[in-house]
Length: 510
Image (cartoon, rainbow, N blue to C red):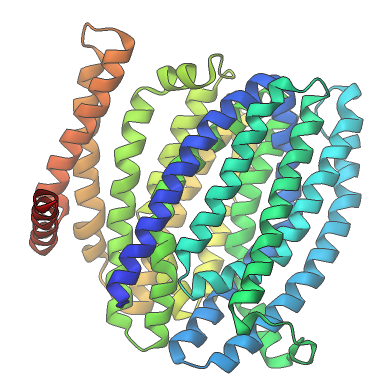
């Protein structure tokens, strides 16, 4: 299969997985919220955030590992890939043991002394922490296997495994209402069991499929490889720490300031953002290994072209989903959850804006990672993100509502995105004008056209369901026309027209 066809196939597989996962997640969240209630749902969201704080280091190592796998494959050094895998596995196994042990002690201490929750739920909170740490351990150990699937561009298989996990979570959510035991404990145990099962299946599949994934203790702790992985990951940690403290730290800040019910609103906003992000990052997930492999082959022009396409197409995809959602958020949440938590609509709107800002420069993030010179870049971007929590705390201190924490997300997210553009221009000698003309200005035009048309449709004298449908039709139609005229180049329009013509001919022949 050619590289372009492989890329198209991977993108299609990720979009199919994302669509299935999004639908199942939305239904699952409704039933879980109804079964647990806002209080317990917020408790689970807060404790899961604590777990993520203790395990973020392995996520940072994952990016470094995937980058070295893909680079080695691009250079054609498969023996080196096996060495990189064993080094990565040893690092992930040891750090998983250390972090989970630290998480057990510190997590239980935080629940007992710092969490804002009912006293009679403290014991349950400790049990949930244990379940979350078990699943986190297997997730961390499986990271080198996931990175190998990604580097080999076996995206379709990862998509199938991810869809299987979503189906199991959907079944768990369906069954909660038929269980008489403590729903929170049952849900936490079920989530841990599903995640552990899926990660173990991934490990077994990777071992059977790839000779590079064979465990060879003699290749563990290779000094040069270990140092290279840790050096790359060390700088990546700035960005990882910023995102970790922003997402998980915000949940803990909201818990201490407003209690678990606000955590429930934040958890719902996070679910909405993840559903939209599933569709937005499909292109990113497909392009990331191809960009790194292209850099390994010395094809930097192709790598930068893919980065520019990621900036524009990723933003446009989010726009088509985010704008109608933001305009009709109250209706969507009520139809979805029946009784959404207070402030959930405001949280969801701000989170979607954060993702829009992030997509504007996501391609440059991949380009810098593929290039490998990340020290100053990560110091800039990660340093900005580290100010999210202090800024959120300061806004709350000034008397801002709980949504002030999310506004801090948006401010630092915008500054971080501009930092990516700055370093892409500096490292690759590209022009900021190119990003403005090819990404920002066209996407702003699409956003203005879609938002204006959708806002007008809200005031039409019809029922809520009809207005909702008209809002979607208006925003998508106006956005698509504006994107065709102002966002796409003549070559892109020609390619899409040819693709549509070929599809019509194929259907007509059948």
